[in-house]
Image 1: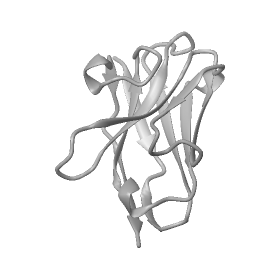
Image 2: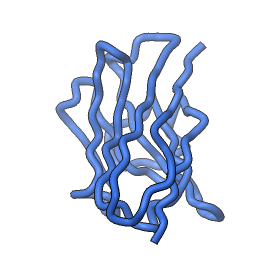
Image 3: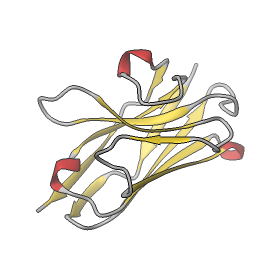
Length: 123
């Protein structure tokens, strides 16, 4: 059974940083695109970032470009999201995703989801 377990969320002040981690298990993910989505209260789940199986290609939503960095450690089956210069509008539950096409896509094209980790940015 595939499992994606996120960690690293929490409360941070505006301008601060957090690093999210997503540990995958149940199968090998070395050949699978992985990514992050987020969902704010009352809003739809939205794409944040994705990374190719090799790590050579990355994609970002315009709202986070230049502030967030996605990376992966295939040996550990783990993907990371480094979030800098956080803003109150970044407040959301962040979900790890696996098995998705490369590029900026909708959540309906994701094969596997984690349960999410809450990020709260105070002003």
